[in-house]
Amino acid sequence: MFTGIIEEIGTVKEILYSGSSSYIEIQADRIFEDMHIGDSIAVNGLCLTVTDFNNKVFRADVMNETLKRSSLGSLKTRSKVNLERAMSAVGRFGGHIVSGHIDGTGIISGIKNDGIAIWYTITAEPQIMRYIVEKGSVAIDGISLTVAKVTEKNFSVSIIPHTAGNTILSYRKTGDIVNLENDIIGKYVEKFIRPEKPESNISMKFLSENGFI
Image (cartoon, rainbow, N blue to C red; front, side, top):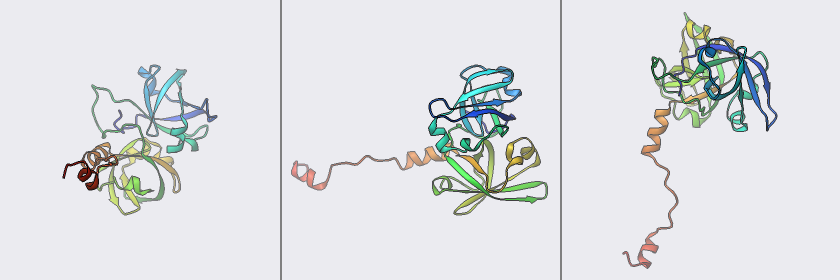
């Protein structure tokens, strides 16, 4: 579990996508303070498991499902990535509940300055947009952000200079693909209210034929 508060920007050292042995190696600094094999690290919002590390470089295996559902496949050597360690039980909860299991991707369709703030507009598919709520939370590349505006096809966030300077949003440009994770609370609420009911063979005819009516 993560909070969406990025700890540092890492750099892709090596990346290999070859089906049975896909992996990514990332160079960083701060997150190695208490790193162990098997730890979860959010990389651009994707929960990856540390399989090896040394000299401030860690490796994580990458599944085909991860490549299909995320922007990870577009990363190259020297690409910058957002990094966050799993949430500590004794730490402050500064963002919102982020699972590291993204719902899909979006495209940056607009960037504009507004005083000290920068507005990013993200265009996304209907299955993403259905959970986007104005003043609600969304994770963009693992960054916990507040939704400032919503339309039928896109949403916008307004960020402060600190967020831009301490995440890879400062490297992003119009047309870039970003990982998106909706607020997990909204998805669970919908599931509880509208549970998926399995198809039933019970009908009025069946009940009549078997003496129930």
